[in-house]
Image (cartoon, rainbow, N blue to C red):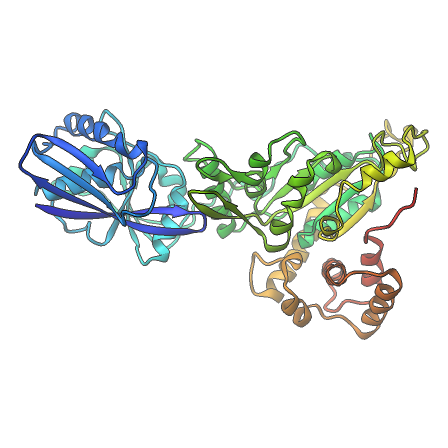
Length: 505
């Protein structure tokens, strides 16, 4: 006797359908699993035996062979358990094939016969949907996340017994049509910092407003204690809410990296890895590749506090995600591609002691300063859109009541600018910083006078081609904040002020 049930494995941004085949023959009672599975899959035999017993379902006392096809693709995890149990029931004629032939079955079995949630359910559903599947049997505890994926039919399963009763036609499971599960109570970002709490630093606040409106990378430079880190952390309070597709992407990535299978991420991520963090923890990878900090900050903020303190190799590895918005994790067994579309907010001191160019005496030698500044390569610095010097604050103003503009007011302008970009680009997730050269040329709206000024400044200041296009993107965002359809002279002038300045020691 033979039968087959389909499930899915996802690999980064792609997925592969796995057909689990079952053959039952005479012989000593035994379960054999073939098809390039890891130890977790091999251990499923014991979970299946216990689950069948607790669910009061007959496990054939014969030789059972399970094949996970295609057999040449490595498989790991426990999401195959329910499909393996289903195919045994199907091959032993205990259930009907109706409803299973066009469905994907996902779930881990507990020893008590329960169906446990699995990691990365959103990625599995999206991968299967892209292959044409719209019907899914999934664990009940995965429903919160699964309901975010539109256009599919979900069959929530809480136990093997419940699945058996449904598939045998005794007690059908009520299907759930997925839709937007967005919580209307979470329409604003939650942040412990507010721009209204930061004394002074008007230029830095303006730069971060531009960065938030257009999704630009920024570098805040200045002596210690001037508020660089506080400004960077307050950035979350002015960002727009996530779109539905962004919620799907972010929730999926966080599900892959944590054990919180049922958590839905509604707020834009804010990740701040320490400079002593390992390269794998930041970039992603491991024996079983998982997203790193740069992918967990997808659609949010990645803060590198004290940028020159990070290892040179880690910083150079940022070139691909900063340019292509993805990170490729290549290992001997597998190569995965994770999304990494984040805003990089970095801070840096001007020298090792931090006081070069400030009112306090610098204790560094010229050689120390040059060596410190050379830790950041030109290609990395060329991928940063906004450079801002954060100046020292007068002590007398620190204890006075702050009259600075609160984050709520700034966020209103950011939202208006983002809405203009949605209308112009026709894509709710495409921001100015992510425009390619072709899109930028057709959508920028650069006036002749502004172009002439930019061309003249680029020639005199020896600006690279990449930096030239980034200045246009920043100017486009400034124009959006001014509700201007074209980039005019003041927009280019302000954008040029945020370019990287060369300093001499």
